[in-house]
Length: 281
Image (cartoon, rainbow, N blue to C red):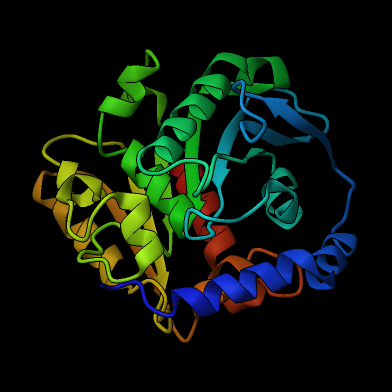
C-alpha cells in the first residue's frame, strides 16, 4: 500500500484538532475583506454542512472553490480551515469548506456521495451568494482530494444527484491518493470493503474526457506517495485530458496544506498555482 504512517498522521491530526495550534492559527487569520456564513446545510445529516467565505464588494459573479479536507476518511472539521477560506476569499474567490460523513458512521462510497450533494448545493445556490455556478471548482487535500478526483473521474456520483461533469470547471487535488492498492491498514480495509477493490480507485474510471485538473504533491510526502499524482496525471493524459502537475520540493503531507496559511505561504507556490488555475479556466 502506498499510504504509509497512517496511525502517526491520525494521531497528529487528533492532536491539532483537540488542542491549541489550530485555535491559535485561526486567531491569527485576518477577518477583513470577506464575510463568513457558517453551518449551511447541503443535506439532512448533521455532518452535511458547509461554511462559506464570501469576498466583500463583489461587482460581478465570482468563481467558487468547494474544498474537502483530509483526515483518512475518519476525522476532520471545516472549522479548522479558516486560513484556507481567507487565502482565496481575499483574492475574490468564494470558498465553501464542506464537512462530510466519516467512518465509522459510513464507509465507501458514502463520503463521495456527500461530495456530490455539496457540489449540487453550490451549483444550485452559488448565485445567491454572489458566485458564478458556471465557474465551480473543486479542491481537496489528502482523502478530500480523493473525493474531488473521484467526482471528476466517475460520472456516476454526479448523475445520481442530477448532474454531470459540466458542473465542474476544474478539479484540484492536493497530496491525494488516487491509485493506492493494495490496502494494509485494517481501518482502511474496513472503509473500502476489501484489500484490493479496483472500483474504489479514481484512476480506474478515467476512460474519456474529464474536467481539467491540477494535481499537486510534496516530494517529501511519506504518507501519500507522490506517485499517486504522477500515475493519475498519466492516465488522464492517455485520453487527451488537460492536467497540470506540481511537485513541491522538500514538502511533506501536512506541510503542503499548511502552506496556504499566513506565515507559511513561502514554503510552496500552492496558493498562486490554484489562483492561476482558476483564472485560466
